[in-house]
Image (cartoon, rainbow, N blue to C red; front, side, top):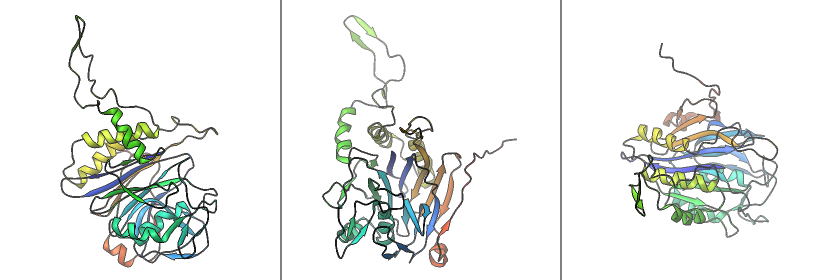
Length: 329
């Protein structure tokens, strides 16, 4: 589970945001990875070096940092989402290519590409391999959403036909089924509207609306299908934010509509799959906003020019996980 969306504000600022819904405790926190960060592939133990600085939700596993979502110094952003029973990677590595396990892909993508067009070109040299060699000990079925500083948004869904970018005109991504299925399914909800329906006669009986009813067709569950439809509708109809500050507030309201509380979605082993955090990435001003499950405070972290130039080592930024309050007396 997970939900992601892109959005723009009237002042031209661009955003990518997501909820991280998972049962396994990722323990991710805001993290900065510098230019020339060296990391070792879990698949073939080769050492790779990033060209660009990265800021996002990271966690260190062994000697490497894994990044689940983030942006780089040029405003290219990405998020990985679960794609169970659908992701199909290469069975064997390809000589002369960069061969990676799925959870390393964002590290490569953000570390070596400035924008969507550059990413599209460089994808020819990368393969994701079906492998249990990753840090989580088993193959992770993932698909990816990308957005850059222009607001261009694309999805990449490995389904056995290579690594191909597809434009995400809806601006939303959730989980299995694939993006094309979700896009087609929106046709079932064209009757949803923001205004209420009027009174209507059934025979000689006039039925008066019992209250606000325009959104009655919106699905209310937490399945990937329900979350995609709900997010697409709200994103399309919500008041367009005037500036970056208002956009962050707007996006968090959208994410709240699909945030999964602990205990609502339980795995077979009794573990809750829930929204471990929300992230809003400002690609224009290079600011990361982070809201952990246990603390609704919005934490802000800016990738400054000084940080890009002078921070030579990875840096984690600890956030308070216990709810904080702003006292009025």
